[in-house]
Length: 298
View 1 (cartoon, rainbow, N blue to C red):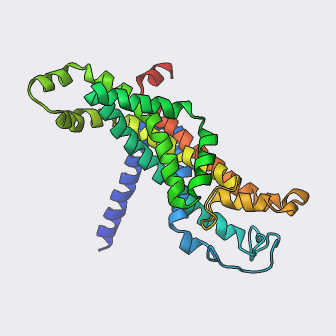
View 2: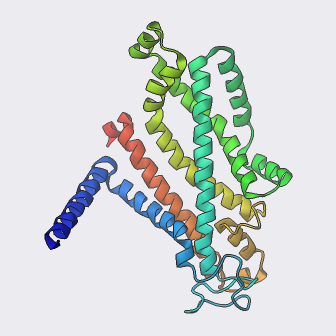
View 3: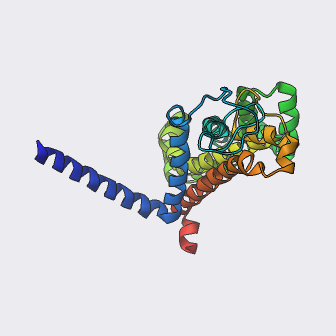
């Protein structure tokens, strides 16, 4: 029995070493740093119930308490524990980021494949719609739509996704047009392969690395935009994301007149910055690995 456990541990340690070497070979030190930062926040969000000492809507004491052993970041104006809100906020901000990333990249993929794969009138209509969206200033548009449609979590996710889909669709459409010029794609069409077969067997596999880069970029961008909308008071007040906590903190005059910004604003802002740094490092490493132009320059 002891020999079996020893062999099992040895195999697991070898697996970890090989996995680390493979990731390091593919992504390098920058990519590993990005993965570590991202894993830290994902684990924090998933294990929020086991980490936080208090609930997200639980009043735990008087307002504006300074940091202590009982409340590591003090309390806000409603008596909520700020450290607990920091942990719970990671779950909300990451949910928005990944939801927007998945929806926008999926929609952009469909948009680009339809435009570039089918062509003709479909391509013309989709590209003109893309031109319209790209001509609209992003921040004022999001502010107006968020104020008009309401600031629920679902609305924020849908608004951000819809706005990003045409931009990604135009880029993916260009890649599809490039792939269509390959000889094997033309040969598949000559032998009777329909567009669905070509998309499944050729377009999507070749677009997958680009999709991964877009997904990483969109997650970080969505977290920043949501934090900005919440900062302006256009976030969902029932979901205390990092941006909403910052918004409520800056509404209090004591934040400007005392040093309370060090625990009421700075930790939440730092989390937004750190997770975007991690995503940027990971995105750069993935793009560096799949784009031959980067490999030649490094």
